[in-house]
Image (cartoon, rainbow, N blue to C red; front, side, top):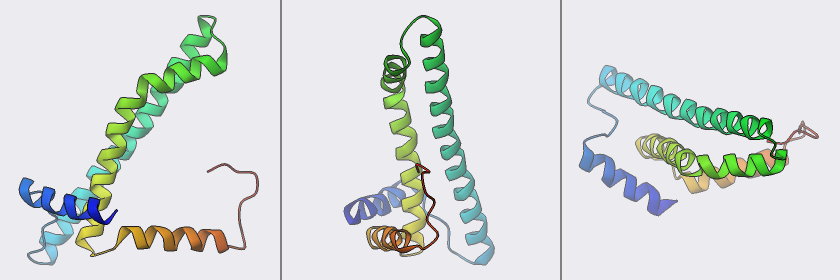
Length: 126
């Protein structure tokens, strides 16, 4: 993850896509724009999932079994959903770099926090 953050920091600099930080209003505007862009990419992941579900239903209607239909649909969207997830990761990395967050450390700390929660949901797949 550290290598990814280093790569993305340089990439954003090279592309002139860093979050602006000249003064408060500039930083605020840049953060909001980048948040909207991240939200758009997350919505595009949802679109790919919707596409997979629609394809699955269509294949089932054509006589394929549910499991086979879903495997075909997943294979059909794999490349595109991968691109959308990569876009999400790029924006998340941009935020982490802006706030000087070690994402690997933050990730493992958060997963440990979740593991230790007393009010865990039971039987809900996440």
